[in-house]
Image (cartoon, rainbow, N blue to C red; front, side):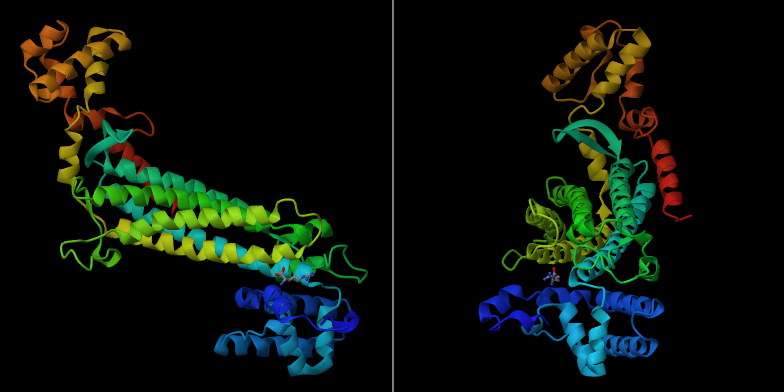
Amino acid sequence: MWGGRFAEGPSAIMREINASIPFDKALWRQDIAGSRAHVAMLAQQEIVSTEDAEAIDGGLQTIAAEYERDGVPEDWDLEDIHMTVEARLTELVGPVAGRLHTARSRNDQVATDFKLWTRDAMDRALDGIAALQRALVDRAGEHAASVMPGFTHLQTAQPVTLGHHLLAYYEMLRRDSARFSAAQERLNECPLGAAALAGTGFDLDRDMTATALGFDRPTANSLDTVSDRDFALDYLNAASQCALHLSRLAEELILWASQPFGFVRLPDSLSTGSSIMPQKKNPDAAELVRGHAGRIIGCTTALMVTMKGLPLAYSKDMQDDKPPVFEAAGLLDLCLAAMQGMIAGADFNTDRMRNAAGLGHATATDLADWLVRAADIPFREAHHITGAAVKLADSKGCTLEDLSLEDLQGIDSRLDDRVRAVLTLDASVAARRSYGGTAPDQVQARAREARQALGME
Ligand code: ARG
């Protein structure tokens, strides 16, 4: 391939450190699609004859069928997927194969292949996110009025509904989805024709190859084109943030599935047992979603650090771009699917949730709000009076609702029996009807909007 100027071949170490075929063989479909687009354009521009182009295209189709059937052979001497395909093409069609690489370098070739692969990975992420969102929205509609404790500092704060809690994750995923879509739009410029770094003296039709491969346009600067891995970083950044969201949901499921909480039973199909403790059912899938988020973030850091400080244009460091993206994409696809299964199959214990919401004086804010509304007391003062009621209830070991009229009036004469109506869990959530609040009718309205946005109705 490049032996002309060398007196001796590469050492065994050189062959091993240089070979990317063990991982970049994953790009074979993209590589062949890129080559077919390139040779068709060379023929149209009369840079290669129609007969030669047809021979090359036929050979490329044969190779695709072979790889589909038998997989891609791994020969370190051939370095990478680009040379592996070209070597096989030469075996199949003879020296005419050498015309394929006219006006092309592996630098614009690999950028094209990797962009095509990453574009598909973004499609998979978008599909996986939408499937999980559909599960969340289904379960949220089911549980729009199921009361559970809402926490801050993991201390009971105010009652919320389970539907509201689940839709919080719908929103995070909506932003993740927007990040992948924006990244996909930014990615969609075709590198082919940038050649090694400076462009080419051949009269190419870059719009033709861009269109053939589903890009919106060709890239505008050849140096940037072969040096750019922003699209891979965009994928990894979006994947990291999405994985971070999944890890928070995973953490909550793990907590909720624990015996002291008992809020949820996860599907058996996504849990495991213990080899020693017969009673155990462990939330391993959720724990691995939580763990994989760390690996995905690690992949992102790996590529960031690889690209940092690289001078223009291509350097071989950039060959290390693919493993982190492949790894992160495999993990993210799995995490999204596992989470979809857990949410769709979760058996929520709404009695346990309601009981837990009744602990910790979750409706204390409602008492303070009532004092503001019914007795026109400034909120800060109402907060203080309510604090005294909480203290008294705690000392009596009862709930706010259980305090007697004498108890209440002993704290403040403006408190009376009417306050009890706002202290129930259902009254508390029903009152929070501000846009985006936890009231069941609000949750139903947001769930309906989400269903429409997802094309579910
Ligand atoms: N295997 C290489 C990579 O993945 C292809 C580009 C090689 N280019 C070069 N100038 N050696 O980056």
